[in-house]
Length: 391
Image (cartoon, rainbow, N blue to C red; front, top):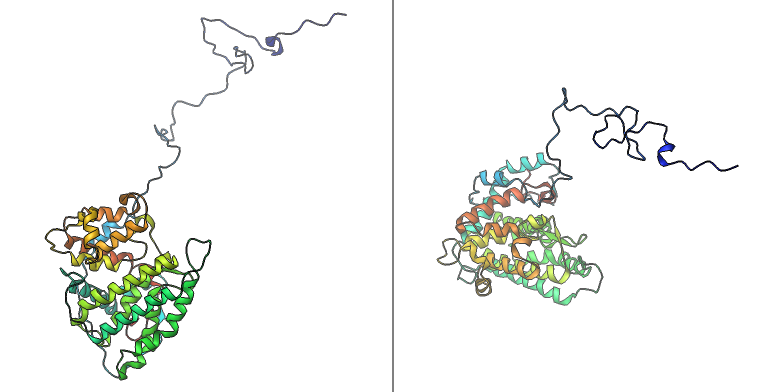
């Protein structure tokens, strides 16, 4: 018996084909040979949607990944410029107490910023800014014994960094030797305060020492940020409340004390690789600091030659960073960060287009209020006692 003749591919499908080259099949199409079949074609989607809107002409695969800045710029612009205020000094009887944290929610932030304490604290920072307006760091100023004492204390803290070198470790941030430095700070903080406090105010150490020890970073997380810097301003504010620092000292407080503090913090950041606390990343002003931009922009108000755009002139940075904090900050950022300035510091790059330093300074003050003093993640660590009241 002969085997049956092989079937052609078309014989395998039990349907009728029509392969006319001059006609377009109106029936179904075979999935194997492509020919028309007698089976009805599958129903097609209607060409219109009576109850639905038409599909969009363009459907992106995904939303574009844009690196946009925070969207609260307009709110900051509309905020009134903070004004300087005189700090009210305390009178006996004194009720110093261990300060504690009070802020845990946005409602607490609103309560704080509606209080006279908040307005006066910010007014103190504005007054410090105004005291250095148009002045270089090296300009002569009134230096009281208290200011000299504080400068001496900060210089001692800097010497301790040399005595406590960083250990070799694999992690990029957070050298554990910093904890030894901070432990020594905590052990000696009260004795430092007693060096310049008068007899009737020595009991204030219970309240002012926590602000001081929190001014130099956190020993557990080995980090530092604008919240710690704000604690240093709060410590200075407490001294002003007690009359230890007076208005005639303000220029020296900025040009001598704060400049020394800034130098120490940069040393700690580099030696112990402190992690930025609460950094806004690329869209932040700076990984660690805010106040030197306020004080530094005030220094340059009405300067005859240097404008905000002068930060892009390397000769100006090299020759004048030692006299102007703003330029010092820019120079330090360019030293520690790689790549084009506009990419790693776009906010500062944008600010360089502002026409004058007065606008920069007022903008910095408004931004400090909005981005530091009104942020729960930062202010949740802020302390309140008798000198800085929770009202």
